[in-house]
Length: 168
Ligand SMILES: [Zn+2]
Image 1 (cartoon, protein in one colour):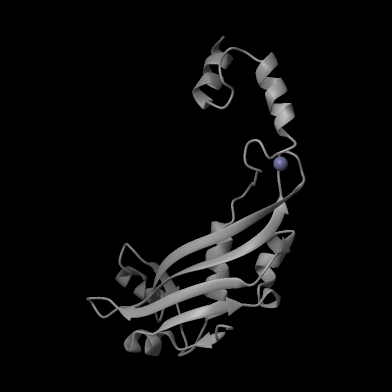
Image 2 (cartoon, rainbow, N blue to C red):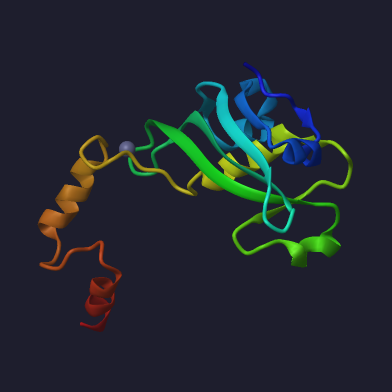
């Protein structure tokens, strides 16, 4: 079931609603621009609630499969992006200091908020800057092994070892 795009987060929080559903690939333009392809709809579940200080809270999970490029072998790589989030609805940036430490602020200046944008922001934050195939599944592994075989006795993936080598 498709999630509604425009929601009233304060009303949903007062009612303690749970929203579950999907966002179509066509509605994720910013994510699409950041990856090679989006492989399926974004799936999300969002629980709206009031916390003990009656702040309006939305907590949930969003996940979406995307195709990106392995920076080691430059072949395609499918990733399941997953984001867990907890946000507090605020009316204005003046209220940023009211946001408890365990929440991110969700600035909603009108009655209605765009749920797609929130979910897209969250999965974009979960997208690593660089991506690699798991060890053993990357055609670039042969290159790494050759370097290790011909390299020094110290492992090259420890930054302190690199410092030691620089000292030598
Ligand atoms: Zn690879």
